Image 1 (cartoon, one colour):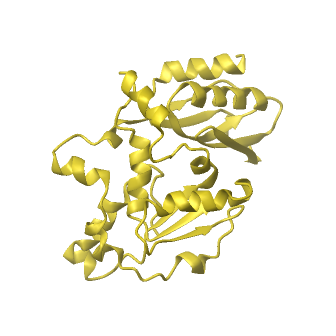
Image 2 (spheres, rainbow, N blue to C red):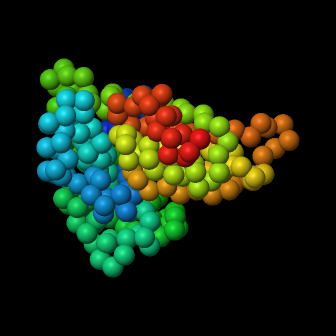
Length: 251
């Protein structure tokens, strides 16, 4: 099993399995795409959000190629199976809406299944025997066009920054994180934090404007409690993001 970054392009990886020295020894059983259900339902990955596109055209500081939407479409184009996570948070009819949108971006034989609270039997995703490398060249993606025309691909414009703020209260930290994703183009956030008055490490995960946080373990005796947050997005400036976070947190 190969688990790529959430911002990775599956097609070039699958194409590597076409190399004779690899093809003679192994095959790609299937490409499985994991989709955040609430993020799709909220419209973050909508195929044609007219208001957002208009804003991009009017603001020269924004990336007009909408790299996140293209990446979402490219990942689905390469998928043999799509898993929609957090279905328990979608509400009545939510999964059907998400599945309909995914179906418009995937080949007809690609199945879309639901996962609730992170639970999914392994036998559902293993043993599909698709031999994905045999058909991957026929899967059209935005990356194909950029490669053929010799253009720099917009996915290379993703920025990754690491912010190490001082120790904060949990509520203040989450308030700061919410401000960052509201005021900056952040696609993914993750990390861990030292929280005032708590002997345990707080893990934070964010997709779009939704954040989860939980204490995973006590700080070890040889560790210095500290906060380290990773933000992935477009046009991110470390100092600006840090100021936004601390300002909203009241630090």
